[in-house]
Image 1 (cartoon, rainbow, N blue to C red):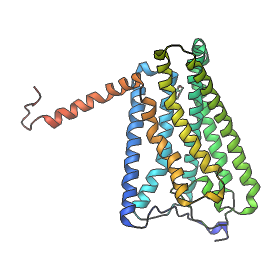
Image 2 (cartoon, rainbow, N blue to C red):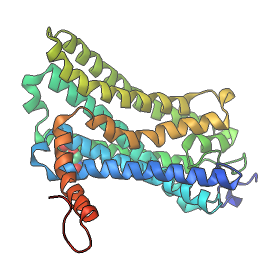
Image 3 (cartoon, rainbow, N blue to C red):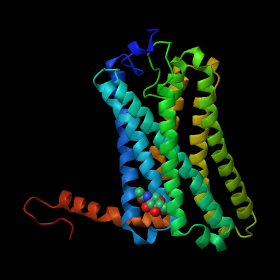
Image 4 (cartoon, rainbow, N blue to C red):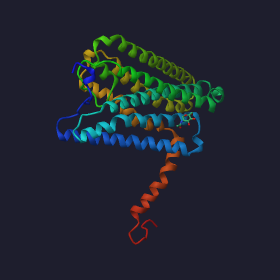
Length: 325
Ligand SMILES: *[C@@H]1O[C@H](CO)[C@@H](O)[C@H](O)[C@H]1NC(C)=O
């Protein structure tokens, strides 16, 4: 296993050895995946179908839901099927594709969270300039910048990671193809390259992080200056959930990428990976739409016809007479 060209497949982490635990893992991931599909799907359709929601905040939320769907779809289904078929294999192409798309969607999500923090900052601290700073063209440019920079970053990262030569075997201790795990397998000669890769990612990430923190500090200072309890309630109720999502995402990802190798245990790595790659996509729609009346109304408008049809079907007797009356 010392020659990297001889490595053609990379076994992923097997969650469990016993059949019961494998099936438990399958059903658990299936439930999370379906919840993420359903909640993000509803948010996407509700925003796309409601003309009242064509504002920057909601179109950015739509973008975020797309990234969420993408990032959870690159990791979870593969891990589920592997568990079901008792396999650990992932092909070379599959590994490259998984790494590329995962980094792309996660980077895009992070860019978008930064843009959304800016959107809230302008809305709360500079309300008079909202129309000029976040006009429709500026928003399209910002969204395009998020997609474009995520694409560029992911390409760079994937090419760079795949050009490292690997010396430490081929077993990835993770349920998807994650960058730190590949770095762990690389030869010690490629130390400089590895450091460059991490430093580049870290400085970009830190820039966004600083921007997000400063935006929220400004927001909270502005909100705390509002004299009435009533007036404080609304901005707080939209910003605290944002902040919750951002902090879980950033702290777990930072921990996964920056922790010293000495405190690495397979179980801890696994928990961290699930926390930053699986939980946010499933929870984001809930957190963002919680306490948001406009979005809830749009979702209700969308779901009610389906529900009432379903109830009609369930409660009407076979000969067509309805029980409802
Ligand atoms: C993403 O957001 C931009 C800016 O608000 C919006 O114009 C665009 O339609 C959104 N993208 C998608 C795919 O909905």
